[in-house]
Image (cartoon, rainbow over all chains, first blue to last red; front, side, top):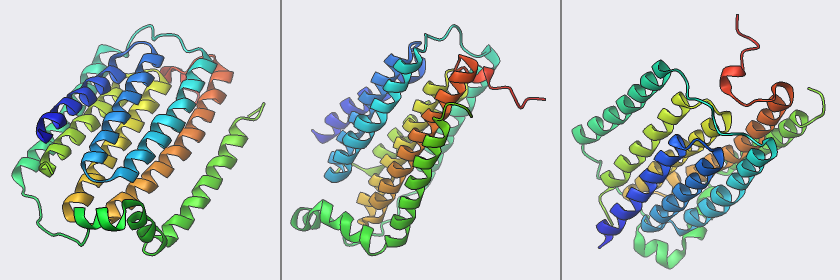
Length: 167
Length: 100
């Protein structure tokens, strides 16, 4: 049952991600990308990470995609007249497929490590996923968390500077 | 739970499709969306491994990746608007000011 569900959602994710690349109109690409994000949120739920699924839907499908669609409509981007030269398309496709082949080859060669930590399904249910992540974020990852705030400040300043009338 | 290999192969497929998009499209916004898709493929790998190894650290990393993606979206789209104001186009082939 679970594997059938996985296959269906995976098919939807792959098809919509192919549409992102092949659609001429950027708006269609953006809507297909939203579909891909929702499929990924489904996978997060299947992997017992409900909080990450909620964050995926709110941050990616909500905030970032609204920003992208806003910019597409603001700039009134027309559909692409033509693709890059056929050489570029060919070379890009070969490189991408080579990366895929390499990854799958290494996956088939090696075997997964059996190392297991303390987090399992029983703990996620009894403690709660949000609490587990919060605990890790504010103990082991406190310094990276604080540095992230500096990153966000830099992004805000950069966006404001770039949005000025004259640059 | 399904075997982790399923998730890893799916993630590899999504990442490769994103790579092909970045290398073959001309519209800067579509390239940007393909980069977001590649980041998401990596996030899926992180969460699958986190569940497989029973370690929450991978999901905290996904949190940081999302933060970086949000910052990247803000600055990248501001850059595109600034470029569009100057060139009336967001085709990456028009970005040639520093070309020799």
